[in-house]
Image 1 (cartoon, rainbow, N blue to C red):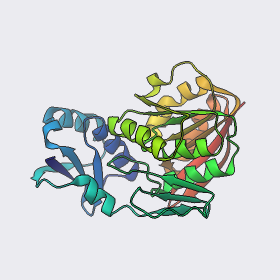
Image 2: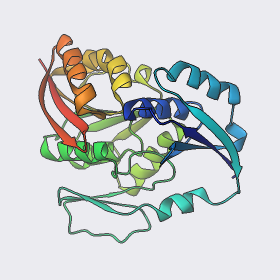
Image 3: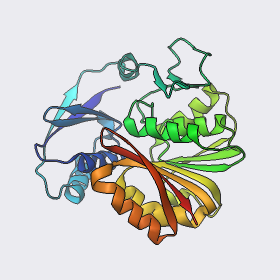
Length: 279
């Protein structure tokens, strides 16, 4: 498959602004992103590149910082093989072993999760995913109905299932992620994860005991009212994808207004994950 790379140049973009921009670029077909000294690169199948859609995203997102970009066509290559060559196994809390299909199995760990990385998010390497895995490990999911928003590869949904969840609904707007969840649940012999393509509208009116959402601050703020409506009383809400300094208090205030009370948080390299409980 032929790919096009769009290199984005910015010296003053903040990390949260970049994350939000990347999320929006994903919605118009970009499927792989790479940090660079000058900013970041975004990759898209050449046949899917829509300059007008790209410009629309930039007009709606670029506010308060300068951003330039350059488009380049690149030689055809096996992108999944290249991506996989940079995917190494990880260990979380000495109990969870996350590997790809081409890595050696290590059954000595309490939980082994097999992820076919393809080109979707959620392999466990990012600080936010690692902290959310820790929360699932530390808390009781047995018999619970769980919602995983922005599920990526489905890694969090898979661990929730392995931790005894009765059922898990895993939702992502990215079709690559949707397909990845279906494939990864089979790799892990998990049968109680339902994959859905979409955003908050895909949740419906069903109620959940626990909600996991590893996205970013702005999307979380937009979706929190929906979470509050479908989270049972005493239900737990786990959030990540944001920064401690800039974002945590804003999310705490929003949750409190919805009668969802902050309990604790984790921090890793200023990335933050937090636990809330609905009253």
